[in-house]
Image (cartoon, rainbow, N blue to C red; front, side):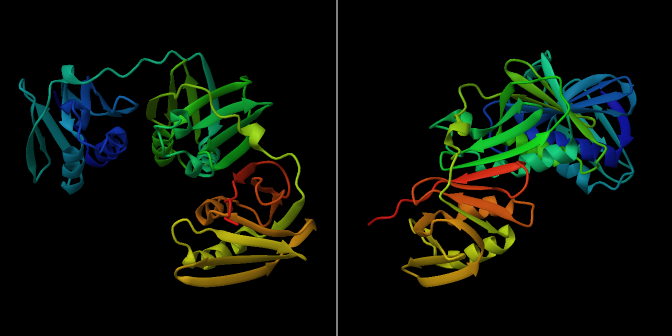
Length: 369
């Protein structure tokens, strides 16, 4: 394999393909590397960790076809240090690889491409297309609520994508909270649902563009999905099993409703959270259009209060995990939110005052008598 190409273009492609490489030591040495395949004037670079694969192609000046697996971290760092503007790469029959520009020459030991696992070929049964900026915003509004406990219910370690009534819903649940983002989209598919691992969605977000004109296509088979983002392809397995019935957990009534500025409320919870320690929660009281926040721990005591619009019954005491409430409030991109409660043991529901583009549920913490 012998080729030359733009250093900047190659470095960007290597960096992005490396997103699929696990940082943990791997029993399969080839999985710590990137597969480089040169065919004519096209170079294909693939990163794969058996769960997620990322690949893309680059125009090069090809001089000899071939392939090799090169350590991803080492290759990425070398390209960052080189001066360029052109980089030359050649590999011999034993996969010894020379990487050079006009000033610097590296030699690294590559691996036989035959040792690299094959990425699944996804035959698309269904697909949907969505703007990059919309998809990125929806993932960011929900990814924080994905479960981190893979041993209890593995399917909750991903976000559910569900198309219903012309809207895409992305939902994350960890057993203590629900995060839902909803957008109307143009699609021929309906009643479509699949669960994407959180690691995949984290890497997808890094490649999505903020350009309003950019679009991503998601192609689906029974077990895998392909995200086509610009010139990149991300292949991921889908999580199997029955996703929790989150709709059944959404309260349909409330005895108390307040309307508050989410940014202001988050700042006040942060003030009170200074006193939070293990197993200590923030306690909230709602009465006479006022919210009272309190936390008392071995560190000390703090109280805060602020005015809100209130309807319904007073709440003497309801406790919550400060981090869960802050995560929800900080992802509300609006001036006011509606917070619905139905006593001290029912979920706290946060939603926009107009529309239904997001919904957050936070389970209260039960207090000892």
